[in-house]
Amino acid sequence: MSVLQRFEKRLEGLVEGAFAKVFKGVVHPVEILNAMQREAEAHKAILAGGRTLVPNRYVIDLSPYDHSRLAPYAAALAQELAQSQAEFIGEQGWTVYGDVIVEIERGDGLDTGMFRVTAEVYTGADVAPVPSYEAPPGYPPYDQNPYAPHSAPPAHGGGGSGPARSARLISGDGRSYPLSIGSTVIGRGDQANMRLPDVGISRRHARLDFDGAQVVLTDLGSTNGTMVNGQRVSAVALNPGDMIQLGTTTLTFRADG
Image (tube, rainbow, N blue to C red; front, side, top):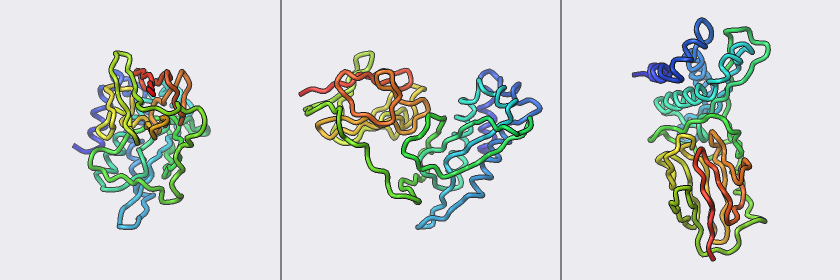
């Protein structure tokens, strides 16, 4: 079964067929996916070692009328488009920087039934909370920005938890997740060190960096964002008692010593 066929099959059961009504006679999601695939093909860049880099961020501009009709389903559609594009890129053996991201925007000036796709290699450190999909297992990741030096790690200044012999996260049901020195990735995918079965959590949602004295929490461009004490964060040093919200999961940070 091809990527397009799998995409169509997933759409059939999405929000009880609402997409079929929304797109009837106008723009169809398969047309958008086809355009995204063409954009990837058109923007290929050959890297050292013969690897082929393609865009990982795709912005879909819809006409004002189509965008208003699609608004209730935009997040779900963007997620499906991102997943299918990642599968397509993986099948071609191409490489991307980070995860595949899809954004659906209002394109003023576009007539009903028209759409525009723009693509880019996105290397930003602070990714906006937009639907994204990680490359499937076995898909070759590109872990270095080909256009700029690595971003500096989060600063460990001010507001830290102070010296601590141990640190851990406590879930709402009382489960304890001890933190080891170094980095711990939280998510629901196979690559996460701390796996949480929550569909609202991205496969690689956030990272905890523990140096033995304090813990810094960094959002990894998750779909739904990371909250600490009710505030969305990109990177923050944790204090004992801080409440971390990922998807529908709440974790409390504890530090002893």
